[in-house]
Length: 114
Length: 110
Image (cartoon, rainbow over all chains, first blue to last red; front, side, top):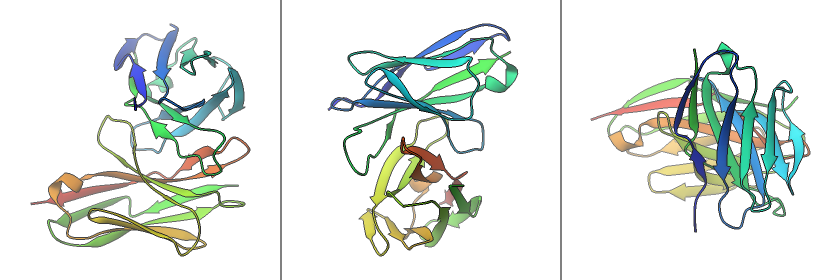
């Protein structure tokens, strides 16, 4: 069984730039959720994708967008980067059809905005 | 509003000194409570799912329990390798998005 993978591991961008983060879900999982984790905080929900459509969004502006592909992998895109976007971005995969759907996390992408 | 609160924020133990971490939650219609372990700079590692009040789960030196208002993570005779941040989360909303606490940073000294 392959776990959740994310790329890249680290990324440094400057304010105003755009970034794309990638995630491959665990085999057998059909749902991908993205979270942002600031230093010393718990992860905050950004959005979730199921069947290639956004299936719920947290309190994040539209410049945060995503995609899910037929193989259930996913991308997170952030436009017009701001300093406060510096964080650990986490992808989690799950199987939506379960009543109690545990979410399994990837190693994360550390984004630094200068 | 769904909410999770963890205490203490940080805990320092001597090796072998048992203790408990607390997770209090407020959610409409509990659909499980999850415990994760997170090492610095890494993604959360799944530990346990607790489904209903009264349930207990064990894994090595860790034991998780659940009541109608809170969950405890008991650490028995911890070792330095148990040092990490422990997060608890509950699913909320129609998407089952995870609502996390801020975590407890555990340091176990040899």
